[in-house]
Image (cartoon, rainbow, N blue to C red; front, side):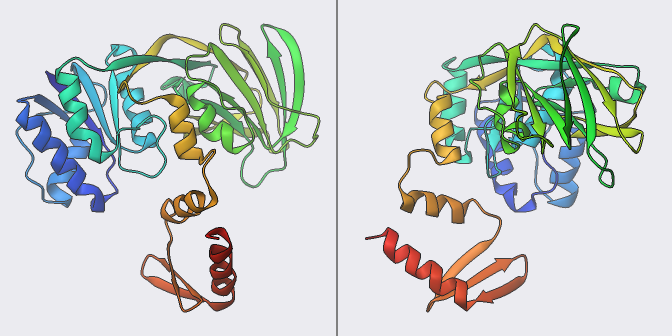
Length: 337
């Protein structure tokens, strides 16, 4: 079995997971091809001994399965490279919050045993396509998560005239508008108040970013409908972000957004259920003790309570907050009662 491997190139402390991945693949005598950028990071920067493998650039590869080792951002990058190749993608999560990359490093051995025993499922995820007359955006017009129309950092809010299948919907006066797939409903869309949508739903969510009117709410439409957007801005330009890759557009650029003619295949274990992921990642239904534990341990900041004093470690800096520490210490005592 041949695997194409993508990984992030900025988490040196997670290198042990990459070493373990290559060890497990070696035990199965797997054929490897590795993204050249990731291979350079592992060998030149981290000085790891990587088994012999083909190196590739961009989307110039062929494999039975793609492995993304990192977070959901790495998975999105891998998905953009896979494109219409119809190759399933396995996401190994070495980040903090993983809806796409949901295989933990501790599960890798069991997962590859299941893969080689053909005991796994492949889910198809819909993709959005953007059409416009901007050549830079058309170089990579597909989004697995979302297409966002946003104001520039220094500008006031923008007006977005939206139409569905040619029929006017409304004019959004807001900081932006997020058009998301069901897969992307737990990403940017969720952070701006959009609905959580089951991945297999054939829908598209339209969610405003900081709308001027509180009457403006998210709306969910069929994914075989086309969305047309015309933007007005005092700065006469705006941003379009496709799965985080942003470009500046002129005010006269009309955007057409619809479902793409292909889908992305995601490898899942049989015991991984979407609703379980929601409960675990969003801390639904857990007790206060569990929620507090996950809050502390999912943060980039390291906390410690010592003699009613709260110490936080951010990088190499250590800050002390005695007043906050006393309040948190009391809170923990109350929650544990």
